Length: 248
Ligand code: OAD
Image 1: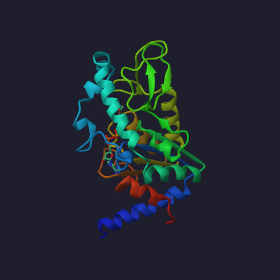
Image 2: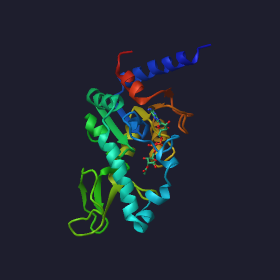
Image 3: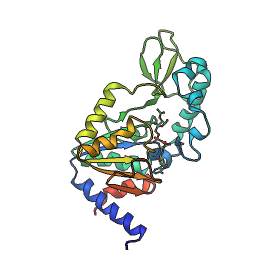
């Protein structure tokens, strides 16, 4: 009987082969892809949702009740992300995009590290921590200052909020549509560093599988999608993702 390391090695071989043969790849990333850059995840033992209550910090109601508290928390997160640099997983995904005729990178992360690593046309389905949005006129702009002076205002004098998706809010329509089309049309789907519990993002793996794509998951732990993907590779993203690009 094959031992566990052998099984992992076989899985990696299979995954490398699929990556080499794929002409259209969709990748969904989550907080785990940035963990090795020093950005906290949400649901691991030291994750943000084990230290803070999302209903106090990541809902429109929380912002309406106490915008200063919410902004202070986002300022703290911005300061961590500002110090973070892309890791080998971000760089490998950017390189893979150069090699494959079509690669759509869909991220739940708001940190901008994929773009910093060189990925193009990144679909930020949960928004960006570097963008602000006016709660009055809807104008969106980028402000990279750390810390941001509170409370930030729009030119129209309306209060600005982080341009991220909070619990109970819809995903940006066009960005999400593009992500769904990519998942439906790819021949290989990779889920990297996501707990796959937050919908609709978590549904993309099933969409891809139903449409006939090979599906690969890279994570430290099993997730709800582990049971139906074609191959789960257990390990840190910064170690495993670059291995997918090396010759089999
Ligand atoms: P989670 O914190 O829920 O999950 C992170 C996943 O990454 C877990 O499954 C870990 O096992 C895995 N992981 C941690 N370190 C890793 C590493 N070095 N290599 C590979 N995997 C690793 O983060 P997300 O799945 O991104 O939404 O969470 C989804 C959404 O929930 C977030 O976008 C955020 C949150 O509430 C909003 O803010 C709207």
